[in-house]
Length: 124
Image (tube, rainbow, N blue to C red; front, side, top):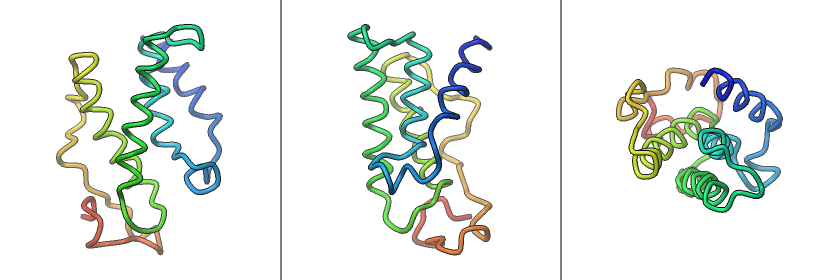
């Protein structure tokens, strides 16, 4: 399991900043797909595993895209975690129990001059 975690971190480290606006996808959504891909041992040649990992990314990206406002990495990350929690339960039968998903609150709004503040559901 530690090997899988290190592999997921290695893959995620290859995604450059600014992906959300420059490439038409969000790194937080990509990270959920990386997690699912790693868990399922997906490769370009595995049918179900590859499709399942892509669907994870798709769900997270759709949820992130529904957020309004300027870029916010925390909001994207929290939204992706919510999506991953739901999809992991559906596909794997386990959620992210150690992460209190319903209680995610951002305490970093002061660092983002474009913070949506009260218009963001994660605003503390």
